[in-house]
Amino acid sequence: MAASGGKETIKLKAPGTGFMDTWRAMGPGVAAAMTGIGASHIMHAPTAGAKYGYDLLWVILAAYILKYCAFEFAHRYTMVKGETIINAYHRNGNWPLWFMIFQGFANTVGIAGRALGCAAMLWAAFPFMSLELWGTAILLIVIAILWIGSYKAVESICKVLIIIFALSCFIAFALQAPPPMEYLSRLVPTLPPIGAMLLFGSMFGYFPTTLEVAPMQSNWAVDKKVGMVKVNELRAQGHTVDMDKNYMKNSLTLFKRDMNITYFISMITGMIFLIVGASVLNPMGLVPAGSQMGATIARIYTDTFGAWIFPVIIAGGVAALFSTVFTYFDGQARVTEECTVRLFKKWDKPGPRKLIYRGMQVIWLVAGVGIIYGLPKPIFVVQVASVMALAFSPVLYWLTIKAIKDNFKSDFERELLPSKFMMAMAWIGTVSLVGLTVYVLYMKFG
Image (cartoon, rainbow, N blue to C red; front, side, top):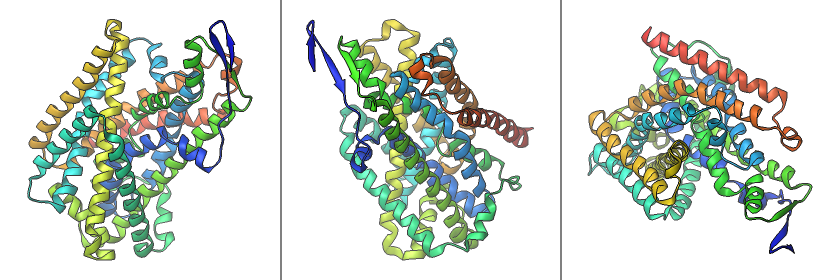
């Protein structure tokens, strides 16, 4: 560093790209994956396998391919521009901000469904409280942890439990898996079975996760101070920044690893949940439903390993679903906060920001409790929320593509544009999600 008029010239070294560098850099991609490894994997995938065998396996692969660019572009935008992608959305007018605020309120259904799913897993192990009381307790615990600010330790425990749960899933798959050609042949798209339309739309809505997670992922990348976020922060403080020639190259390498590793693991795990559900639950005629959801899903593992594995599976399932509820409570509230202070600039102060953030969580708590007691059917509630997420997704996808196209203007930024192939895939994903939304709604209600 060199002094210059009271300020400094700061040389930013290129980050390393070794194993430990990659581990430390991982964050926004992991957080995004945590929103998906919950309702989609633990609720939709086993249900699809139990009811329809391998017929819907191709949907998981297709959903991951179609949505990939939405999450990659949102994260890339923050890496290159050094700001949240919500800024880019706002340049199209105020309507995208109102759209995301509305989506936040609509997501109450999804949050309640995830809490119910977590409650069903707990109720399977500890039936001394009702399903509804467990669901309410989960929402209250999430808010308490967020407001106290002590989630870091809980997150570490949850990650360990999720790893145990995922390993159990892989082992169960290895022991129960049918011949590969029996399910690999189902990766070719076919029309969904009769009666599967709601679940079909739900899977496209929630795998790999909902598209409102794209701006959440961008916000988490801002908090992690990745790429140009760190550069812009130093420049705003009046410093001159001298970037190592490999600073952005290595930063983008780490971002892609964070994105791709967690994305791939999430996809494979989701497919395994469906395959094991099809091979274990389908022959027994068991379908996860109602308060028995947790116990039914646990049968996948207890029938493979014996009753001793039950507490491990319940703990892992609770950790995965709890992490999903927590991540949405935090990420969606942040998005609502950012949108609101852009619409009402006088509220862009620490006090009002905290009120908006916490106020949204209180609204979800009250409305969520109402849904939990009014409709205590976790699978059905999450399916309804998933179809709503599918209907919202094309708008967010289009806004994300437009953010990249309209805002990468300098030579430096244009060199970091996605490839023509990825841009084409993004447009294919957007158009496909529009077509799927129309198809599902027409077949279900037309």
